Image (cartoon, rainbow, N blue to C red; front, top):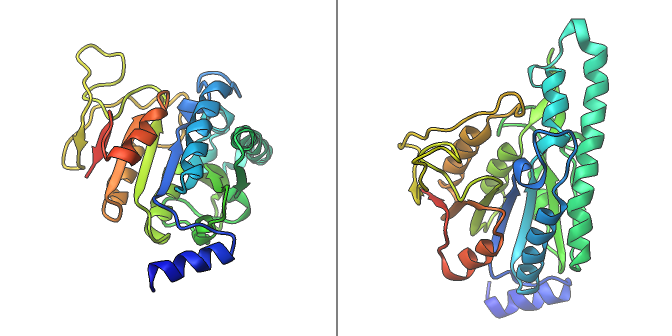
Length: 280
């Protein structure tokens, strides 16, 4: 279809032709202190939302996914929610499922609040209401996250979802959501994972002597990381890297960058490069 005709149709529908279509993941360790129950880092959410709002005003289209951090992982770890139904503690587990889902909506409200502060409407899609099953092959219509309208962003997050088997429930990671979004929603130009403790993928865990940034990474390269199993009930940096590698099969620009420096998001989109790790 002629570009001018497309633009006219978008305008008639109250839409704009996006310059770029970007999927951004706010890591749980970026927006919360994962070691303390429900401690949100509001200033980090605010600074990312400020950059995102400028990009939206510049006619970029953004889909936002966020992790659970201490709003999900600690309670899920305590009651072994990632393993599914455990008969001896099932009553406590079912209560924990409800609590984690409520906590995730509470965390999501912080994200939506700061988007609104900068004039952007965040439309939330809690996975517990529309998805079931685990891993990137979960069941659920991801295409609703591709809806585009001026000054709006579709938002979803890692969550405890139903599993239609003896497991009963399980944890659907935000990284798995990223894989499906980038596979099934057409036109994605960038996929960006915002980390909370590093500039990108590193040769060693952050703060370890000799740790250096890997500027270009493929899944043929081994990574040495630290999975904080006391805090994290998904796969940590390893799942993130695996998910990014899958996404890179469909999306040309897949990056892991430091979410504490959100100006790098804009730099990447504008120039094609920034400090971080490009996944190929």
